[in-house]
Image: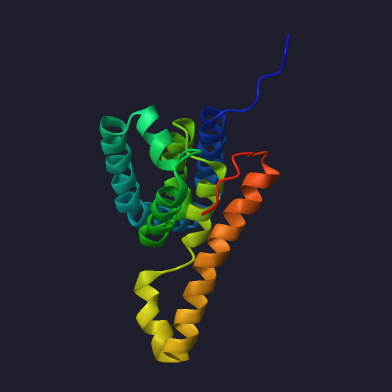
Length: 170
């Protein structure tokens, strides 16, 4: 008989037991924890809903062959552009985007483009005016440029380390 790895159901059951025990021991602390959870959930739900809509639309519109062409081995500059622009314009918590990226990866997205997408999320469009105000245009543009360049370099390194041998250049 082999041991099963804990699943999400086990984790949920464990947390439920923990919070019920907390409610029995310190009900005020339980209410504060519930309030923090509700605030977190209300901030994550809109982005999660957006990602689910995008995933649904992608599942309807993009077939595995199309994903491989746009984001796979032969995607070239088009694939890099999709990954970088997608990373820059994506918003919300990163973990909400993991299912979408995993779905695209299953359909043929290269590891280098996954890494570039995740790295290019460091460019925050809503923060650019604030950066310009505090640091000036030169610094903001240079930092943004370097973040994009290092997104590509990071993607290439990840592809090499992950065993990708496609040899395509951005």
